[in-house]
Image 1 (cartoon, rainbow, N blue to C red):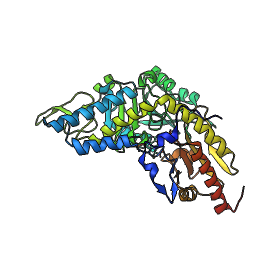
Image 2 (spheres, protein in one colour; image 1 turned 60 degrees about the horizontal axis):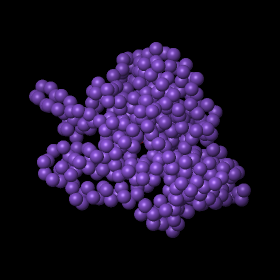
Image 3 (cartoon, helix red, strand yellow; image 1 turned 135 degrees about the vertical axis):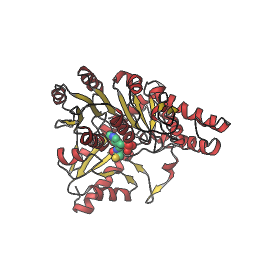
Image 4 (cartoon, rainbow, N blue to C red; image 1 turned 90 degrees about the horizontal axis):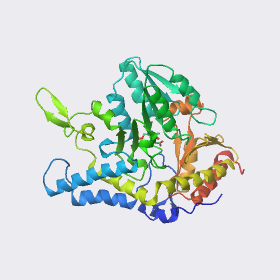
Length: 412
Ligand code: C6P
């Protein structure tokens, strides 16, 4: 395996002040990017610049700072639109993937008895809102099964689509547990052939692979700023213009209106119709800076480098006796879930933290997959990003051996 020289992660680490800090006296090895990624100084500075220099509300005051804030916030919509090949009217800023999915569940008009197709590998954000809506609206939820190696069973999806009442197919682009990357272009095509809408949860894909929503041809695409070098509390709901124009807003109040009378109101144009109230202005500006930063590195290079690093990590982890890895999809990203013998993932995480290594342990907010499908209680998960190095993986492997020594009295 040869390191792809397209990216120099050690140079990239210099863009992040957080790498200067020591964790328990050790350099930070951050392998929890699926939960949230680190934030480069350029993004922190963009947020600070707003608060230091033009801290005003948008679309309201005619004063200079209000104008500056409006221009910066709106240009963030443009940058994000360009990043995923959408129109700027199609980019709605929300607080994150969860909020984007909740808006869709509330705003898409369906009929009682309509079928919603999800998959067994969904995050709670793409299950729980539908469960609640199903209770109130009488929808029927079906789950596409996954195969032994953690890929979607496309034949099962096709069989579920034979039902003539399918309203929505809502699917994760990349599993936050198995790392599997689903063929969302094919899924959107199959959904459309049956007259159903296709929603893609891109929380784990947008940070890592180049995205072209026009090419995928999904109807909606949701993601979070904080997993892609941006700040927390900002995310995106992309939707096809004609669909968003036809939909009712989910939240009501200031800025989303065109006119308000004592007995009725009319709605603003896109995207503001879906952005009620004062938005996360600093967050939007920070997200704009984040996508510019990712673009300056190059999403193709990020994807190539992470493919190399994922392969490296898989090989190293497979070499540790007692480590079981979950998911072996042919097309995958740098999310790797595993268990170490009988050691509880929280114990593994605690031992690793002593060496400055951050991983996640638990059910990954995907309990149906972890408990019902994989029949586990919890897993350890590493999730890579473009600033991780092969040395980071080597340190992880050494620390896992230490955990085995502590908990299993085992030198293997
Ligand atoms: N998964 C993880 O550690 P929010 O919290 O709204 O930014 O993203 C929710 C979400 C939706 N879909 C997928 C596939 C996700 O992975 C997540 C967030 C984090 O796996 C936190 S639970």
